[in-house]
Image (tube, rainbow, N blue to C red; front, side, top):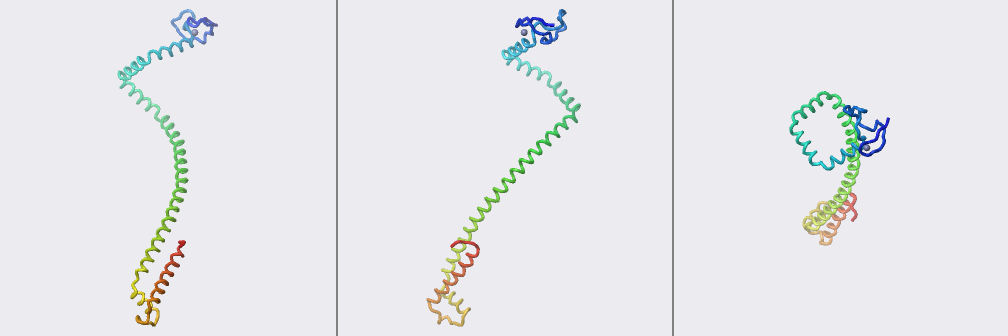
Length: 188
Ligand SMILES: [Zn+2]
C-alpha cells in the first residue's frame, strides 16, 4: 500500500508514514516521516531559544519530580549500574596501571641516568675540590711542622734538616696525596 505525501507530494509506502489513529482513512499521518523530521529540524532551529527556555522552565517546575525519578532509577538499577561501574573501572584500572607502569619505567631510566650524570659530575667536582684543598693545606704546612715529620720518620735532628729537604718532603706529601686522589678516578 502506498500514498502520496501531503508535503513533498511523493508516492511512498505506508511504512514511511507515522501512525496516527485519529486518521480514520488509513491510521497514518498525511505527511511522510521524512517531512516530519525536516519540519522538526527546521522548527528546533528557528525556535532554539524558546525550546531551551521551555526545557529550563519544565526542569525548574519538575525539579523534585525529576530528582525523585532519578533516585528511583538508581535504586531500581543499583546492581546494573554497579556492574557498569565495575567494568568501567576495570578497563580504566588496567589503562591507568599500564600508563603508570610505563611512565615510572621510562622515568626510572631517566632518573637513574640523570642521577648518574649528576653524581659523576659532582664526584669529580668534589674530588677536584678536595684535591685543591689538600694542595693548599700542604702548601700551608709550616716548615717546622714538616721538619717535625722528617724527624719522626728519621733519626735526623731539626738543625740537620735543610730548607731543600723541607721542600722535597712537602713535594713528597703532595705526590702521595695526588696518587691517593688518582686512585679514586680523577684525571689530573
Ligand atoms: Zn513527504
